[in-house]
Structures are given as C-alpha cells and as structure tokens.
Length: 225
Length: 233
Image (tube, each protein chain N blue to C red):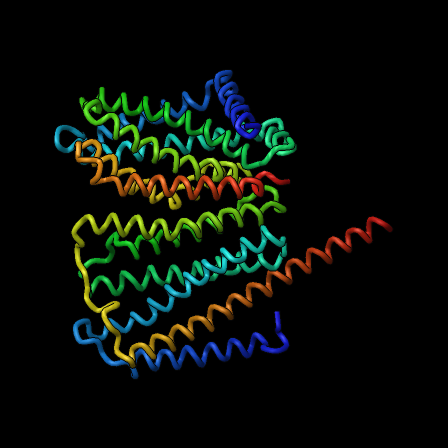
C-alpha cells in the first residue's frame, strides 16, 4: 500500500512538473505531427495503400516521439540534482522507476492519441471500426517501449551526447516491440479476428513483463552514486 | 592473468599454428559440397565467428552480472574486453554472411531470424561500446555498462523469437538447403577445428585486452599514490 503511494507520488510529481512548464508533452506532440506531415510526402498513403503503410508509419512516429519524451524526462531530473534527492529518499529505487515509467507512459499515450487523430484527419482514415483492438495493441506496445525507454533514458542522461545515446540503445532493444506492434496493428486495422494476431499481443505482454521486472531490479544501480 | 603458466607469446604461437591447421583443413581436408561447390568453404569461418561472437556476448553478460554483484574490477574488465573482441567476430559474421549468401541464395541479405538477430547483436555491441566511452562521470561507466549489458543479453533471444514468428507468417524469399541438414563427418571435424582456432584467437585477444586493462588500473593507482606523496611533501 505504501509502495503504491510512493509510485503515485512520483507519478504525480512528474505530471505537476510537466503541467508547470508544458515542454515535454508539447514537443512530443508537435514532433509526432511533423512526422505524420512528412510521411505524407514520402509515401502518399491513401486507400488500400494506407492499410499497408499506416501501421509502420504510426509506430515510427510513436518511437521517435517516445525518444524525445524519455530524454526530457531523465534530463529534467538532472537539474538541481533532483535524481540524487530522490535516490536519498528511504524508498526502494525500483519504485522511482515505476513512477517515472508511468509518467512516461501517460505522456507518450497522449502524444500517440494526437498522432492517431492527425492521421485519421489528414489521411482520411477511420480508426473507429477497429478502435478497441487497435487501442489495446498500441497500449501494450507502448508499455513495452516505455519499460526499456525509461531505464535507458536514465542511463543515457549520464552520458555526453545523450540525444544520440538514447536511440542507439533503445532501437535495437525495442526491435520486438516494433515487429509485434506493427503486425498486431495491421491485424487490428484490417479487422481480422483477434485470434489471428493474439500471439503478437502475447509477445508484447511478455516483452513488457520481462523488461518491467528487469528494469525494476536494475534501476537501483543506475541511481547509485 | 596466469601469464607464468601459459605466457601470452606461447598463446599467440599456438593460435598461429592452429589457424594454419584450420586453413589447411578448410581448403584441403574438407570435402567439396555438392550443390554449393567451393564457396561453401566460407561456412567454417562464418559459423565459427558466429559461435565465438555469441560466446563473447555471453561473457559480457557474465562480467556485467559479476560486476554488479561483487564489484570486482576484473568482472568489468572481462565485460569490456569481451565486448571489444566480440564486436570483431560479430563483424566477421556479417561480412562473411553476405559473401556466402550472394552466390548461393542470389541475394546479399534477407531479414531472416538468424541474420536479423545477429545484426541486432552487432548493434548492441556498438551501443555498449559507445556507452562505455560516453559516460560523463568515469566512476559510473562500469555500472551503466553492466546495466546495458544485462538488458541487451536478455533482449537477444526475444528478438530472435519475434523475428522467427514474423518470418514464418511470410513466405521465405530464398532458402538454401545445406545448413543444418546433416553434415558430413569430415565437415564436422573441420568445423570444430576451425572453431577451436577461433576460440584460441579469441582467448588470446581477450587476455591481451585484460592485461592492458590491468596495466591501466595499475598505472592509475601508481599515479594516485605519487600525487598523494607529492602533496604530503
């Protein structure tokens, strides 16, 4: 119960910080929109083509928007030695990870909603018929992506050139999320029966569980000074 | 480093001899493959490098866990040395692979499970080494690298599984027979001898690298001791 309160407090703190300067979320959304905008010239997704291109396009936009968010989330903690402050608190460091992970998840999901809305508007594509399974797929994929992104954000915050270091770490490790996410999204958007792509959803769940647990255990070492 | 019982020069000599034996066996002893012909001989080098690269990544994992657990500098040295040498072998896999694939499959590359996961492994080696040289506070390098080493190691099997499922849902572009479908006894022997030569080379490079890391630490220690002494005077 106490642990839940701690995670909630860190989550609320990140939300409050974000509410006060509104930098991370705005930049994530704008960046996502710009990607959708540029993809339009690169691929001209329309009609049948749209169904083939959209899943990949969406996940690439999500991936880059996420990188932006994880970088900011970790960099913000470096100002005024916030991270040391949290590390000194008499709590399990894994809980700090969970709180920050939830905040990252929350921001990325909002940015993704904005991107999806822009896609449906600009590409004249309706997500409504498949919204339930599409949303579930995006949620599970994002969870796995954020699970690794949060710890890698904290790792690369300790490096020079962290803007480069984070994607270099994140993208190869997140390959299963892309594959499973894109496959399941394709299935969902085509309106196939969920049983056909259930194995991909299971993979996303497995990936999330493995890396949530692993990062929870390892975060202690990232924090120590 | 056990330099007395088995000196590095002797190790180098053994490696050279073994590599020559392996080369002889690859080109003279091993029989020619019926469908692929001479080009199949690259197989011995390709597979040996792949196995060695996987072993190297396993050692990175062992070193990383060992460091986080015991904080022994040697464990971190092992992880670093193994990642550097492993990258060389992993690169060797990715170079010999396309060279073999082009004449046999007709294409340089295909996104099949094994190719892609080896490629991801290669990217992880690069990311790991980049991280090691970019960490701001030098005292934190070991821990950061260990965390990434462990996450990367857990990731590789998941990548492999996901790509295998991905590919089985699509028609394979080209599949060569050969691999895995029963190897001639002489081919097996040649492969094992070649792998032995590669392991010998790998362990030689690893020991060289560990020796260097130890020397560096010793130099740092001496420098600190000297600075302390001069400050006292």
